[in-house]
Length: 612
Image (tube, rainbow, N blue to C red; front, side, top):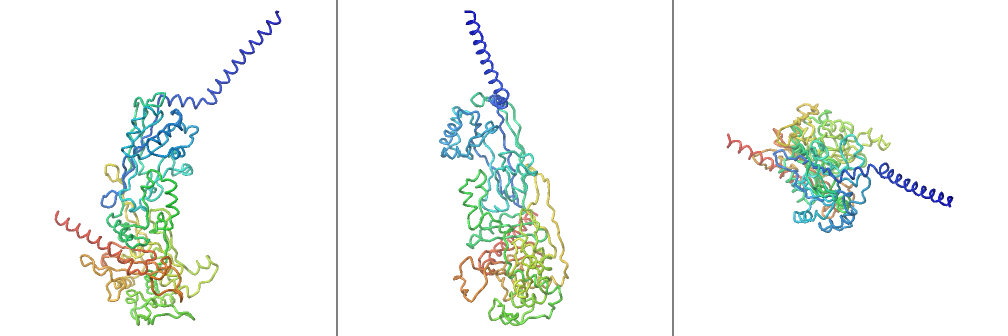
């Protein structure tokens, strides 16, 4: 009997020990293994920290007109750990805001670790009629928060999109980069353009709220608050009126292209227009995958900044380089002439002039004004490709202009050494003939074109820039951009004067190819150059009627002008892809911009006179 009692005692003791072991194991699991999780959960059940986004600074044009601002976005957010079933909560929110539950569930996913205790965006920029519907039901939606956050508002939709840039959520790779030190997961940052270039200045400093919540995540009381600090404002050199006009004229041309206008005295960029473009508003609240795919795969490449990235043969706009080389090397003298009979022979091959009957006897003035190919074939052939490259580089060609925007293309100024290095082949004379009139290996960007002609107009090369100044939110100046002279042309005044005279003749001589620019407001005179750049080589089968040539095979149209001739205040470069002749397609766009520019000056002068 006694042995039986001992066995029962031992069994009871074992049971008690086992129970204690289970309790100890459970305590170890709760306090050690999942201790951090429950400590955070306990804290969040009483105090919730909400981030309050700072308002990004405005972006304005040179006249103070707002291009980019911020507006309220009514958002719905959720703290996953505070919900009574995340999937059920998200489904209820989706039904309230009119979205497909599967899309919302896919967007939020299954947050793990600390992400369960962090605020997640469920719906952004709700309609003002839908937002109150969600607020009315917050009492039944544990862990759900509504908040008004600033969202970017690009006032003119697509206008200047490639300059202004766009926003996007910071990626994991970017968080590791030094330039994004201090940024956090979920931050919205500038992805392109000015938004990226000045992201830190524009973004301001976020604030925050500490809110007392109950066990169901419902807000009870505001404990403390840190006010957000708005970002700095950016004033650009762009002129909105000229920018919008340039974009409208490109649209009317029904072709893709770019327009660049600069102040050649300072380098200030007045216009940087592209067609096609896109609306940065698509990205402001997060673009969906279908819309992104449509943009990225569009064959017209609307995300491509043609003004600084597009590289094209310059056509006859290059002839100023050949003229400078001929003058600088002493080949073109005041009595130098060329007999143009419609073609130029080199070896067994004939190179045609655009004017089939030829221009007869031409000097430099007529050659530039009427764009005689044969004149420049002969000059280019005699000075050689390396001399041509020397004068092209004087104008800044074959290198970046230095504009602030990222990834500017450098174009191409070919040399004999470049060809040997690139292809392992010697340069041949026939290639010089093509280069001398802007064909062959030559590649320019539209901004390089305007920059080079601005240098000819003034004799000095200034770095193009877009950011005029920074201001604090109250309009007080913080930083101004001063013009930066990169170089002066190491050429005699006589050389520049003769080229400038020829460029004036393009517009004002009887047979000048830029005749469209002859009548400007106030009787102002302009100088310029037309250009027609071949896209595919001509053959005997090439139709003579341009309308019969497929659009992708038609020539690019160029026109560049500066004005007034005696005191250049603006230089305008226009490229129309597959637009045909520069005189008929590109020049009218430049004319419209020049008219607007001069009319604005006349109006401003009149208003100043009245005030005085």
